[in-house]
Amino acid sequence: MQPTFADLSEEPPAQFLPALDQPVVNEAALTPAQSAWRREGVVIMPGFLPDKLVDAYSERRAALNLPGGWPYPTPYIQVPEMREFALYPPLMDKLRELIGEQMLLHLCLTGWVSTERDWHQDDYLNAPFVNSWYAAVWMALDDIHPNSGPFEYIPGSHRWPLMRGAKVRDHMPWQQAMRNSWPSISESFVVPAIEREIEKRGVGVRRFIAQRGDVLIWHGRLMHRGARPNKPGMVRKSLICHYSGVNHRRDMPTRARDANGQVYAITKPRNALRRALRTLHQRIAARL
Ligand SMILES: O=C(O)CCC(=O)C(=O)O
Ligand SMILES: [Fe+2]
Image (tube, rainbow, N blue to C red; front, side, top):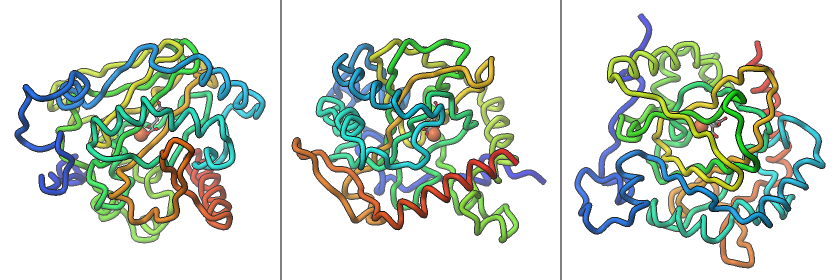
């Protein structure tokens, strides 16, 4: 029997969740962004990014000349134009307004094509103690073509139970569960379970057809995907960055601060190499 979404998820105890994820909050005291976050699990900010930052990063990224971007998750360590973009102080202030503590940058996806990653909640990839002290940001570097496989999401799904990596791995043969590529291997039963849940709840899918400079911040528990482009390889110029609360990543102890006091995770060169190999391995496994 195929597992259901309920089999793969749980309701994390409220005491471990950020303030805006508590069952009851004083709605009247919330800022507009906080209300949107609580209601929909996303905050959209049209034209939020200054041209200067978009241009500086886009130029640096274009020079790389690889559709998939940097083949490892932490290029912001070596690329100052990316770091300045990802740690733009007004963006970091907004993240703090939503999550309730300073946020730590630890992952950037730099491809100029859709990830084509099917339905998931990001937080199931994390250690269980992260518990939605997590947000990701979709930044448009250009006007996004609706056929290029835009970001899609289910508004309000950040209130669904949270899928847990351990529960997913419980449904896999142990050899597969031990591999770093368990998230892509398990898609064969995880995605159908989510699709059945979407149908059961009768909820609609929304697409983020962004204009250059627009930003979408999404909740670590929001159900989302990178849609499949209508034409394979169609260009989709974005930068996607992931952040966690600084006090909720004891698994990321090595950090640095930029001139504005913003914090980012550092990986030791040996780990970075290992991660690059792992990413490569995952990409190959995802194609098998
Ligand atoms: O390709 C996309 O837009 C989705 C990316 C995604 O799922 C993520 O960054 O967590
Ligand atoms: Fe994701």
